Image 1: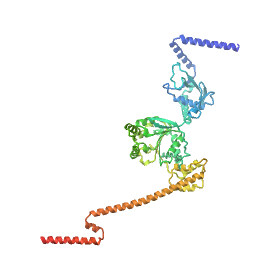
Image 2: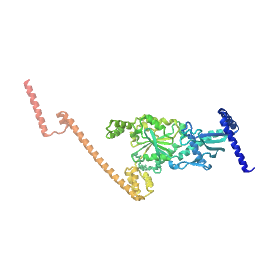
Image 3: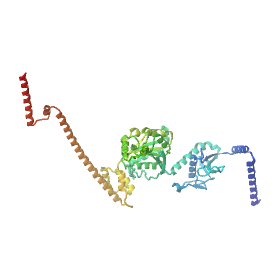
Image 4: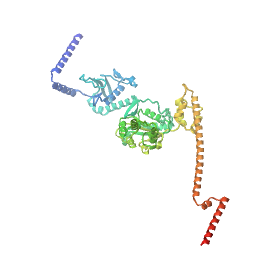
Length: 525
Ligand SMILES: Nc1ncnc2c1ncn2[C@@H]1O[C@H](COP(=O)(O)OP(=O)(O)OP(=O)(O)O)[C@@H](O)[C@H]1O
């Protein structure tokens, strides 16, 4: 048969089948068609040796994107992009994310797990009625279909699928753009988190740094351990130290080390404990929840809050409505117990990893209940810049590992207290490319000025304490004299040592007077 004839025969067969199908659709009763479809698929399944599992793009409601679908999409995009002939690229420019590839629609790829062969196929469904118009971006619904032999059912469901979801999640975490969330009006809003700080750039003693890094890495790998001991997978860090010692920098380095998001919780903007709970439930796993300057955020430290309120008094608006609004804005009803409940209880139910970090400039002002071990597991002091910390900054800022001026700087740093922020400011080149020696000299000058100031202040303090002591001594002697004057003149005379001659004369005159008076009285009687 000629090929032309063959195609024309094939065409008429297809046309015939389509015509018969159209007639059935038109004239066959709906119930009968349902019945044929149902039993037809049963017969087919009986003889078909494979199983199929479908993962739809949306589950639950039409608007609910399926977590499993997107995780499988990531897994397949990563593992099968070499096999698939047609791939889709993410809109990387718009989202500022690294380019990610995934299988295009109606594409198939093979996978192998413990010697078992499986096939993944991507597909797309169109809505039956054109009147439906409430799908998020288009009216199509995508799905992935996994096909495998019936005899591997247990392996696929028990091991392969959990493996796919775990791998997919890990790839998602690795590829995701990390976010910095802040709260306002009981909602989180976010920006892309791209802080460059790492533990290499944090200036502190290497031993302390290694200890913190080890602690964080151990925590991130301890899911099973936390489950076994029956504790929520969370760890609390209290960072304390003077302003400019690197508390915020350390938080950024922590998040970068573990690939976590940051939730910067502004407690004063949270109305009450209920709102606090809502905000915290909305946080994702693998995140650092930060409350900066915790001593100023809550009524945990009475005096501090009063002080803040006093400072605000001047700025209080005259209009009563505005005043009430301002009071509502600034008054947070979050309580210590609300905060403690959230640290202890809220996440115990979920197996997700979170760090919670408090920072403060005044550790001693905090309620001991808030920072006890178990809540704040690790207390880290960020201190003034010592020579070890300086070396980190010198390397980062000036690419210097040693310099003849280092000895002088080491000596001065031992004598003067300067924060890493101030040291960093001196090391910052004023022009590019800067001269490292000029920066070091600037630091030396700064340290010397600070030393002079500290010595001056110490001298001033010495002289003022001396003056205070003298004043105190003078005061006490005046008081003593006043007390003595209250007592009888005789006793005061006896106590106050040798009397003056005029005073003695007066005393003798007094005695004589009394003697004369007694003798007169004796004469009368
Ligand atoms: N230990 C440090 N290592 C590296 N850089 C530091 C360090 N400490 C401070 N800096 C530098 O000083 C700047 C201010 O530091 P940071 O904001 O981390 O201090 P802080 O302790 O959080 O201050 P505050 O208590 O005022 O919030 C940072 O941008 C950083 O460049």
